[in-house]
Length: 429
Image (cartoon, rainbow, N blue to C red; front, top):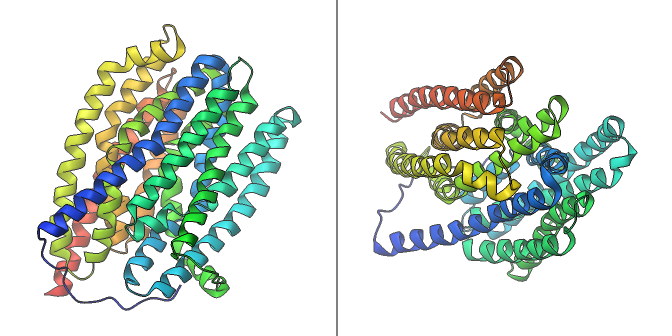
């Protein structure tokens, strides 16, 4: 993708209209992500109650695997795409070209990933789980065609809200209507896949109808350039994903289905808590990306506000999850499961730590063009996680390993960001 010249114009000062517009977009994005994470949480509740902890663990393996493979498919293209779209503000044709090239790049990665994953899963799991494997592959194509990143870059939050809510409500209706008996594993996973396909189809129909997309053929040399530029981001994202869905998928190979189900439920609860902070992070990334190279001090001011917000909000979420863990486990699995309670507590405590690590790493380092630094930091965290996961004993190993790894990532990303800010300030003096 061609590098666009960066404006040296400073961001205009905030006035009441700007503040009101920002708050409105933040509210819309908050509702959007509440709907986004409501479905996986409802999915966990329904499947946990109907299927039981063992069969839910089998389904959890596939849903976690799709989440991990989705990082390979996304490959960092969404973050690069948001940055390019914001730089092309006012040039609608250029923005549509970015949409076309990013989508083509994601479909290219999806095809390769789906073929390799499908073959590997049939070899490891056998043809008896063929329907689950096919649902996993179809899900990945729906994920590749998602346009939510594009709407966020344009700050069209209301459209994104409508698309997300409609597709999730349809998915919930399907889930409750077809997952009614123990053994409905295939029906459960296909309802999960349906949401991805419905979200992509509805999203494209809306952006085309609104004139935000048109028939622009991808420019393959720019798609290749996207692949070249995004490798550092995907390397870091893979390390980050290993601490979430990848870790649960890894448990599917080394632990019992019951442990996998417990870990996946804890992760879903953690992600549901993080959903309340995600709108702040995503909206702030657009602003940070705009100011990073033109007004570093303005970016620092926004960063401090965001840090206070996510750290305070994350702490409140952690307290609520920690003290509500036993009640949550009883409501979902209808019994006493100490491992479930323990994992929910540990992952709840990691919410504020994760919020800080993502702000320093995924947002700030990438906004300042330090993708390689971000990748290196997260890679170290992933290595720490894997070492602890395989060396610690007991069913809580996943929770302790995750907590330790995310703490290390937050500390290392913060130190690296501090050095980057010193460099940016010195360059402007």
